[in-house]
Image 1 (cartoon, chains in turn cyan, blue):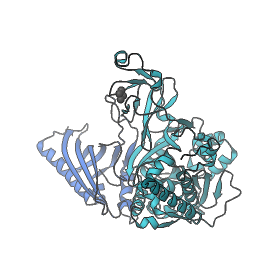
Image 2: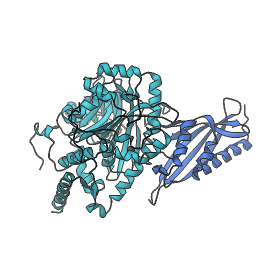
Image 3: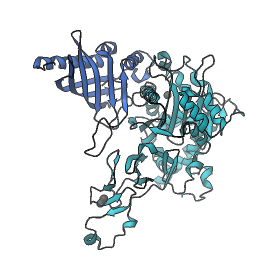
Length: 455
Length: 169
Ligand code: FES
Ligand SMILES: [Fe+2]
């Protein structure tokens, strides 16, 4: 059968790629291939944890935002009791989306098609002509809005997973949770999202930005050369080399960068003293404080498509170096289209002058118009285009950067840390995890829970 | 207070057309000279909300939130051969229409609203990006010349359909 033929061709490509990764090469076609993309939706996005929202975006009962996991739309709402719910945004009667705003506050949702009404917990509370139409036989309790199979929250970050057999989020994050704590536990008050996310569409395959953030410090020297020219980044084009390249397991990873030699940069990303004091008190371990002390730039990706960036930059050449934090989701739309969702976050109890400065630093450097981000988009569009044709089917890309490096045994955090951030080890690990999912092998953590294999 | 005459309306329209020409010709330094030193340039993020919820300015986030210093920085960046987002440069065309002029709150100032349609084409890709917006400008007369003291660009989309806002609306 044709379908089986296609499937086995895909398996062959994936096995070939898995072998290639051992030698540090990857096949370009994975960045623009309709068949691979369809398989990703099933095998990656329907089985991994997808990031939806931060608790601070829906502070009050009834507050909701509409978010996506690949094609699926969810209402993320704080119900009347204050509990966070993730409800599939489709009426349980005939499937009409109930919520067509991006955000708002609601005590109930009325379907525009036949008027079925649901409360903020997703329960069916109203059915027009119920007696006449259903003769009293409709079991309302069976027809509430469908919740996402798994919903979990880590320090305010709300995730959902479409696979009911998935491991817990904590288990899924593995060593990455330790590093996430560097960002989420600086203050007892936690983080807050400022405003709405930036949303825009880039003609790129989703993996290119995900891999860029997990691994690619190397590109800053060329892609972001203008940042050094303008003085928004340290006056050394290779500034992003001087750090640790950390594989945090299960396809997650990050880079943690300090000052270049002979350049002194403020410790703790340059956070104001209030936040430095609070992180010293709130971090879960002394090792966190020690790592944070020598950090100015942190970039990473939580497999598959949530990236984090916590970096000290200048909002303009005349301003002081200022840290900013963004999380960004690379939502797959097609093999060559990705919707970017980029949120700006800051410690809830940070001084207001700092919140303003950090916001401006974010808007000027990242997000839709960011002077860093603009140039990244150009590169990712280009690679996606190059991967479209027949040449890409046999075109092996070089992922060998840093293959000579040995892990640093003294690194205080979990995972494997290489003592130079100019490495592609994280990219290789990301693609190895990607291959495992695509070959439908469950990652270690979840195999314990479920030995069931899909046919 | 300024009295808005037909002549003044024409003068403002000509000013906006001239500005658009500078942008489309990538004459960004000349464009900077049309701004006051205390200029604010803001492109708020649009958020789709239920009818009746005030639509702006509620998103609390902006695609661009600039002052003169940051705009000058963006212009300086565009001159670098390594500003890849605009090298090769985008071909842009600003279509400016529906110019509405009202007196400003202060002497020598005008509130001007205009609609803008921006065509952006990059490289040899056949499709182009089209952005539509309403601009709310504050113009100020400085030494006999109109200058832009403030611009708020209200985009007509929640999800921006261009790879980056490296162009000025
Ligand atoms: S589809 Fe919602 S009430 Fe019928
Ligand atoms: Fe980059």
